[in-house]
Length: 102
Image (cartoon, rainbow, N blue to C red):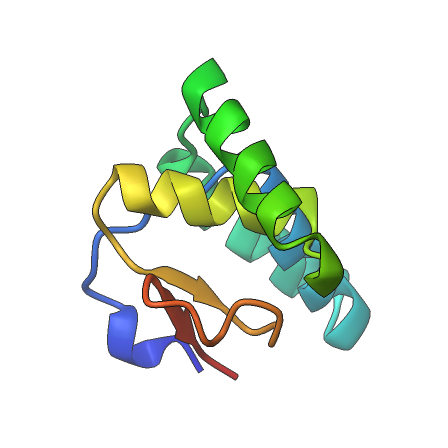
């Protein structure tokens, strides 16, 4: 699923890492979830009050789509780093900054 991006710069927030951990825990097992958590914990970036404000505006402008706070913060964080926001959920797949992977 994410193999094409294996050599790419990885940036994530704690919120996104929570979602990844939860998904692997639910679909696979705790050992794999912990392995991924350990690997990507080094890639965590904090988000600023500017990212929070931009993510809230982004979500409000698209309130009919019922976007999650995590996805909005992840998308805006990726934009700030000028990288694609990789996700497996369909909520944002038609946005230019999002790369839909499943």
